[in-house]
Amino acid sequence: MAADALSRVFSALADPTRRDMVARLSIADATVNELAEPYEVSVQAVSKHLRVLEDAGLVTRTRDAQRRPVHLEAEVFDLMTKWIERYQRQAEERYRRLDALLRDMPDDTEGERE
Amino acid sequence: MSTMTHETEIIVDTEVPLVRIIREFDATPEKVYRAHVDPELFAQWTGPEKRGASVDHWDARTGGSYRYLITSDGFEAGFNGVFHELRENELIVQTFSWEGMPDGVALEKLQFEALEGGRTRLTATSLVDSFADRDAFVASGMETGVIEGYKKLDGLLAG
Image (cartoon, rainbow over all chains, first blue to last red; front, side, top):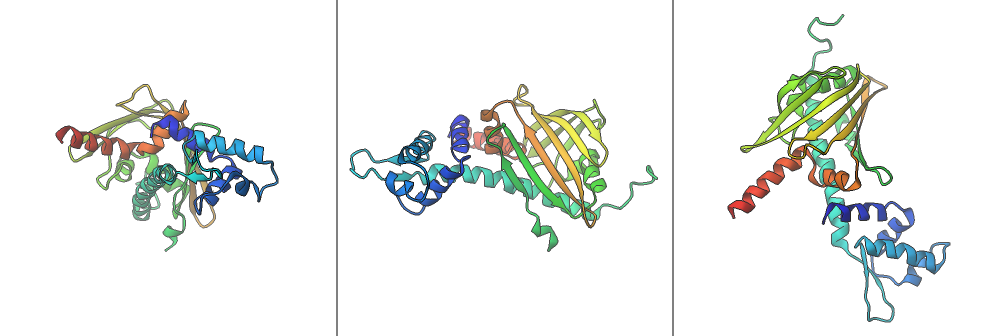
């Protein structure tokens, strides 16, 4: 995935309603009406959110089926999560080395300060 | 294990192209700060692997600059930047560049906050000038990613 595509994924997931929709779609496919149910917003508003998720490549809708269920593209979602997790893990590894170093550090610098 | 209770937190901002890392340490701000400005200490913990970095140039004062190299399995990556502002035990504002992409520069702000019990919260913010660069930054893991990228490229070229 190119970096600008990753940006679209990040911004698509910046919205709490869209994050919630993705969480629900991670359990099962759902139609627009099913997705709209728990929210106090119109089906139109939900469709708008879905378009943002679609543009980011996070969800797809089957063209032919009458229900047109929304499907989460788990791979795209996983990839982004993985990148952030890996970044987190690398930072954590570095900081664990720093933890060890800090434990071994004397309380004063060698006489150059008070 | 108290050190396990404060895992690194990563914030990938959606409004501004920045990455923020938050981490707490069981040491005073004086020590954590020193581990960031003393080249011998810094070289021991930074970089992707245990062997750390080799510091080529280091002048930790406002207006000074730094350069260090990370070597792993024969691959070398250079990083450099300028110390823009240093406030002892409180703040480091610096730039950071990977020499493979010298036009790209991150503005880094490291804040050292004293917590109760002689502990420290470090907040490290890296700001770049586009979301594409920021996301590439996260996707590559920067220091780690550059070296990994070289290894992969080498594997590809050899294959």
